[in-house]
Length: 54
Image (tube, rainbow, N blue to C red):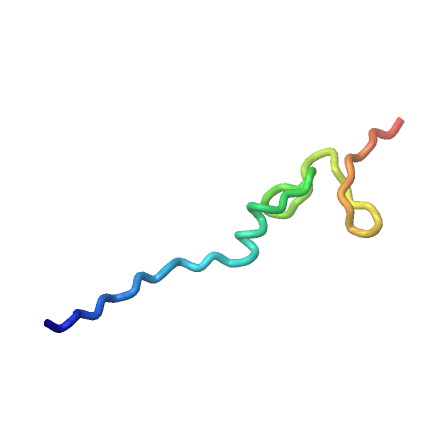
């Protein structure tokens, strides 16, 4: 008897951007990277909730 070679199954690769975007989520940032309404950037790149002006 001779063993037959079988084709290995190829797995789909996921890019790092897609993988991380589903895991790391910041409050106030949409999945596509844009800010949600009522949030803004401050110095240092942090996202904070904007306060209403009086």
